[in-house]
Structure formats: C-alpha cells, structure tokens
Image (cartoon, rainbow, N blue to C red):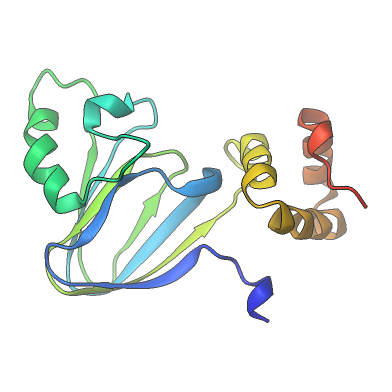
Length: 169
C-alpha cells in the first residue's frame, strides 16, 4: 500500500530556469537523481561549508535562478575557501548527493528526472535515527520494527547511542 512507501522518492519535471534552491536533504539521507530528459546544473558544497557564506538561510529557500545571480560570483572567487563540486548532468546520468551536503540545481532545459532519498548505515546513522524519531515518529516505529526483524546490529547501535528514543511496544 502507499502507506508503506518511502516519502522520499519522486518524479521531477521542470521547465528551463526552474530548479531546486540551496538546501540540505532531510533526515541525514543520501540521494540519487537520474536525468531522463534535458540538462541540469548542480553545485554541491562540502558539509563543513558555513551556510551563511553561501546564502543559505534556514527560514527560506532562495530559488536556484536567483541564487546564481546573487551568490555565484562570490563562490567563484579564488579566495573563497569552500569550493563546490560543479556538475553538468546530461540524459542518462545519475548524480549522487551525499548526506549533509548543501546543494542546488537549475534546469538548463525542460527536464524530467527520477530521484530517491535513502537511509544508509554508513555515515551519521545515529544522528539520522534521532532526527527520524523527532520528525517522523510513526515512520520511525515502522522502521524500527523492520530493523528488529532484519538488522539487529542496527538496533544495537540505536540502543547504545540513543536508548531514550527506543519505540515503545
């Protein structure tokens, strides 16, 4: 049923100059995006980049077309210490977005893509668990039941790092 599906996968369509403003993916997830039509321009910043230096404000997301006009020249300067990864994505290519990397995308053409955010035991798993319990408690309870059945090693990591976040039976 749809209730058992992950809420973090989509088909994305957008016209030229649309895109996604600067953000960090939710819940410490990683993501992949495969492009089916068009071209996308990506900037991915290392996770230690101070967000205020790249125009990221937690209260609003600046549209990518505006971000490029307001902030792009700053990050191109030789003395800017946090160099982003620049990607020009073409049809058939997949971009991987690591957990906690601020990134933005602008569509250079009409685009169609498929994306999925996913949890990984590699990286900040314990931080991810804490955030999932806080932000998505019903999902956390279902996930925990699945972990108990299939990944007791991860249940043990949760018990050691966050015993107070264990779902009640």
